[in-house]
Image 1: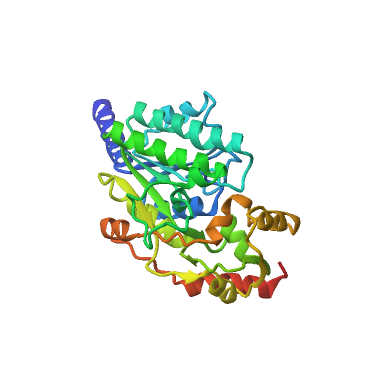
Image 2: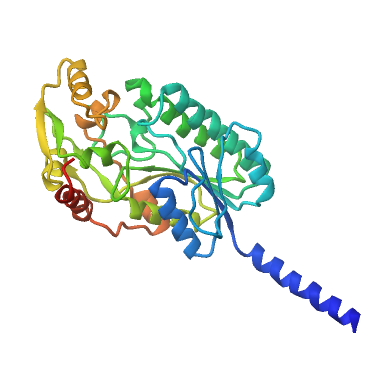
Length: 336
């Protein structure tokens, strides 16, 4: 009888171990951001095991989701990889152009990301998804009408403040081609907007009054934050696919029309000399209109998202009107 009991116990443990192995383990960086939290919620619903990390704070998302505050460059970061056997890493922790100085962003976006990739290689992570940005293409009067993934990255030539963003993208490409067993997807989304988004475009559309450069009305693309989270989860669902992908809808709107549909008053300002709109924006406290993004309010940067749409059967579910409605409703609740 004692022997039979022992056999039953071993069998139960074996079943639990097999079930645990069938649940893919995913590390999500940048967990304090709304995009990461939307992504984590979707992954949890699809029965992924999720670990959340962020350099700002440990985020309380759910009792079954471990959360850590980490510095990628500190030795303790590797302990998370030792403790959890990750099948995938979703790197949404890119520090945006609105956070910290250039030295801080370089350490986080380049050195920190390199450390993350090294650990992915060392601990044999199957796939890595990296959030880059359409900013890497640069805003120029000579851009083609539609930018595909083979378009040269010119942002660092046009603005020193975007160097770390381009370096992160280039670093991701190096690891993608050097370590083929780590299936890497580099996502370059257009403007992400919607509830809770606090990037430059989100803060700009939240205001009641914003600048408009005389003589310029660039066409812009917008993707709802919920659709971007859907796109990331779809990408995670195809672990053997890798490459560079623009993520954008097949829809766009001129800047002045965007302001009108978001119930924003555009204040005209002269665009030459180049330093003048930057100085006016700084004096007026328009933090969402930083000097290094002025060209993006002059020239269109429209990306072709067809490669991602075809590879992952992706189509945004939220329209531009739904995005703009959110910002109109914000202004009925308070003066910005």
